[in-house]
Amino acid sequence: MKINPGLLKFLFVFFQFGGMAYLLLSGPIFANSISLIITELAGIFIGLWAIYSMRIDNLRILPDLKKDAIFVHAGPYGIIRHPMYLAIIVTFLPLIISQLSIDRLLVFIIIIVDLVFKLNFEERLLAKAFSDYETYKKTTFRLIPYIY
Image 1 (cartoon, rainbow, N blue to C red):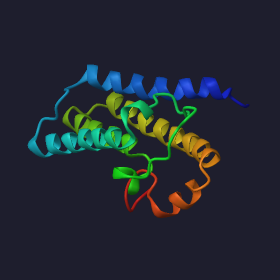
Image 2 (cartoon, one colour):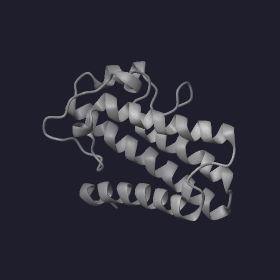
Image 3 (spheres, helix red, strand yellow):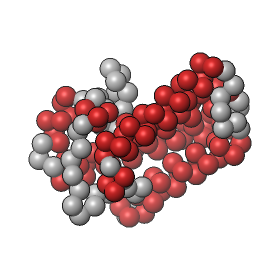
């Protein structure tokens, strides 16, 4: 069964933002220990650094490229191909740990799975749009440095 790419893009965003909203509404917004708060702030910093490096006018919620897209490989993109997705994981992990429950953990796992599918979808688009993307992939980590 093949899913319409337009619907697929919407589903990626729906599960990502729906899951994040659920986690924010079902538990604390700030972690409950200093080390977890520092981790949460690190995630926020990574996200802001990624947005700054890519420039806000290039930011896309849906996994697609704008007409005059530029290939960003500076800042955190010089190390990780998807730093905003890493930022989501690093920001929300302390919130899951702070108020651990089966439903919150399952939603967090759904977000991670969604982000992995979404980044693979995006990488296919980027490889088609930018001839040097394959070379870039060889010099960077996909999501988590030294792991994935």
